[in-house]
Image 1 (spheres, rainbow, N blue to C red):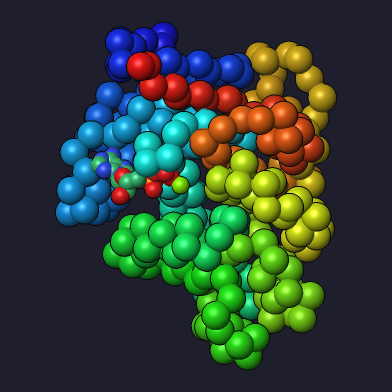
Image 2 (cartoon, rainbow, N blue to C red):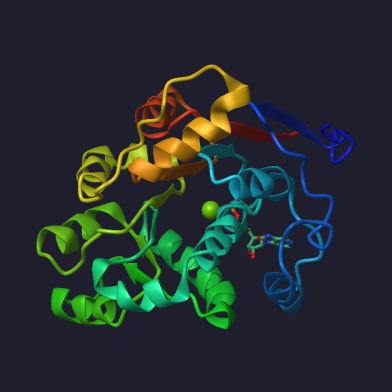
Length: 266
Ligand code: ADP
Ligand code: MG
């Protein structure tokens, strides 16, 4: 059962998609483990924001998601917490041995400034957890950038243009990257990044096809069988607005996403 009481008076919340989990009541009363709760406390966040309440439990289901909420509403943590938890779930030894296969996750942002903000938040949470983030945003020479990347990282945060350059010059591979975040997707479209996004995704040896079924009962089993044979990409998209061009992008790259819209009232 969904708990619609949370923020019902203050926000317009629209959610679409099957099997939507309950929103978070609080950080403490959630599936978030102590190591991350401790960081949340240290950083000083007492309550999840509306988009965090709705999107974090969906993120824990490891499914595609479109999150729409205004600027300043806490979207970064809404995608970072499930992403960090997913990386924590990967075997640690593999993380060390497969370092030359590239990061596990890629976060794309339209500008250097936005990528820097995400990197800051990612380091705040990733440092204590031993999860490394490297940004690929220009400003360094290719060689310097390559050196930073060769030291290994689990997460790359990048602006699309610079990332294409680094990939095409083989300073980075995405051989084991199966988790992609498009942040500020509306700005990304406005800035004409879609061809770059297409190129970047072509560097990943993964599909976002999904077994075709409307049989929700058997969906988990079908997915499990499918995943034992294929690697597939989990794709999440966050945006402040949802113009038709962003809808098109979502239809093209996301696979049956859960859709969360948070609008403020008045
Ligand atoms: P958006 O991406 O939606 O524009 P951000 O993720 O950049 O928003 O967050 C906006 C600001 O709110 C940041 O300064 C961030 O540190 C802060 N913030 C995020 N989550 C919380 C929270 N749960 N409680 C208090 N502050 C938060
Ligand atoms: Mg943001």
